[in-house]
Length: 284
Image (cartoon, rainbow, N blue to C red; front, side, top):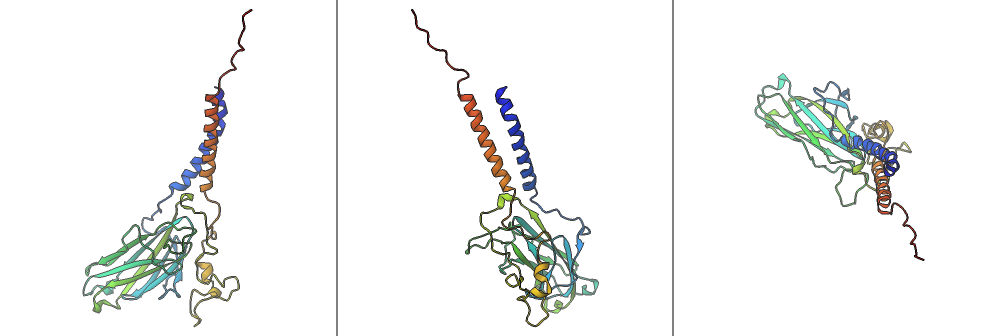
């Protein structure tokens, strides 16, 4: 009874901490939308290169009218501990029904250093038959890390570029109109994926000159990744960058320390004698 009274309060506190942390880590998969209707309206055009990529935020649906064979670029932010998932839908209107053959479309995702990141889940290439009118693509990246070794190809916090294009089509079909839709979600994987180090600054366009407002963008004056026209700010999460801040990994650390201390107290209480031995009696 004495041991139970000593441990009940601390154990309830530790259980509460573990329950809070478990809820945060359990949210590992992005919540898909049934038909895209829940996504907020995003930009209605796409860039044609990394420098002119159109910025949008996770949860928005970016659309663009283009031609078969165009290279289309968008950019969105992803922060530490998030696992980005990009979905793309290509729709060919009725005016493109006279296609000569099938076409293969591909979606690629690049980090702020313009390194192509591998897809760990989803089909990033898809073929649309000559008699079909739509194809859906999906690419899930690895969890974004706050810091990585120089030789590693780990995804880092910052801007992520999406490139959509056709990679295999009949020459006669190039130039036919298409409609594209791009969405991104960033599921939070929790502090279990946190690391000790952090970047000095996220990898976003114009980050070196954002504080001075000079920008590093398009010298021709028409670029959209210029620090002066606000693209660097548009490529930032709504709540700002959280790289290196407190994570629920601290909850697990504190809870583990509390449980370890309680285990030590319980072991000591059980191992020590219940009462002092009586003094020896000596005969007369």
